[in-house]
Amino acid sequence: MNNSTWRLVVVAALLTVGATGFALGAGLASEPVSVSRPATSVAATSTTDAGPSTSTAPPAVDADGQTSAPPSIAISTVAATPAGSALTGERIEITISNFAFVSADVSVPAGTTVVFVNEDEAVHNVLSDDGQLQSPDLERGGTYEVTLGQPGTIAYICNIHQFMQGTITVTP
Amino acid sequence: MKLATDPLRITTAAVTVILGAIHLQLYMESYKDIPIDNIGRSFLLNAVASLAAAAVVMLWSHQLAPVAPLLLANSTLIAFGLSRTDRGIFGFTERGWSPTPQAAAAVAAEIAAAVFATLALATTRTTETDIESMRS
Image (cartoon, rainbow over all chains, first blue to last red; front, side):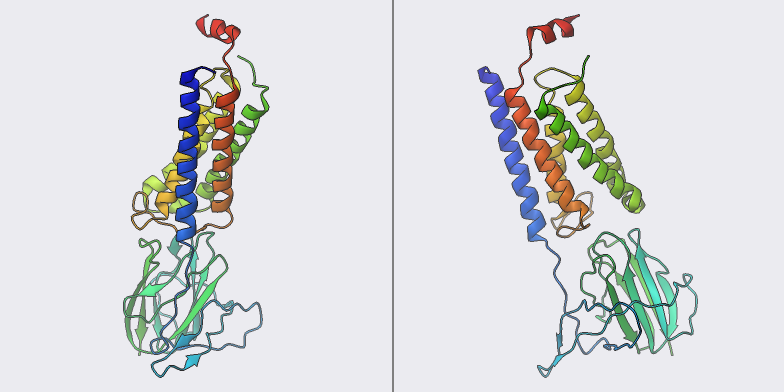
């Protein structure tokens, strides 16, 4: 090889090493981190549903320093509901699919348990400004459930992909 | 124009096609639905460019042909890294090795493509016959 070819190979090798280091460093540096839910804002829900059960949230610590058990997470059998519809059931499911919350805008009576199910290959989470919804990062198949007691409107997003938004209106 | 027989070029082309296939699968699965248009287009463009780069390295005997998959692989690695920063790429961010397992598989294919392309660059010589064929 002549000198110009060697220079090209050296540049190619340096470029490859640099790009590889950047990609690996960025990927490792942004590993999904679980988010603790504040015990005071979200009612932890136990369930006795049959079927696969996966715990996705770490224990939360309340103001007294008491550690509470993470909520039990279960696959809900309730079908997704049309956007904007009023619901009377005690348990509804909001699916995360194709980088969107399916049935993103729903209205539910107070006391309803809302179950988010991530069906995407990408990691998503569910967060609201008021802290009522504060899921850990959900891998594919991961679920997050919360029981909503206070009437009002809760706007929520996936804070990894902030174009993913929705609202839950809790009625008395 | 004849197919390359150099194992380094063949391997480079193979892993380049794999990285394109992963991006195409992600595009078809859900990335086409992302409301940031440039993201879906980028994944589709990556798939097309991967096929083109693989074709170049297999069909063009010139010494510089491996530069095509090399640039594609390194560009894709850099885009992956940018998407894991706070600013993201085109405003789109991902976290860690999500989506699983495609992200890790794609990065592995990109590194392999870049390494094999660099080795192909270092070892391939343009022959007098090649030069004559390019002139004609």
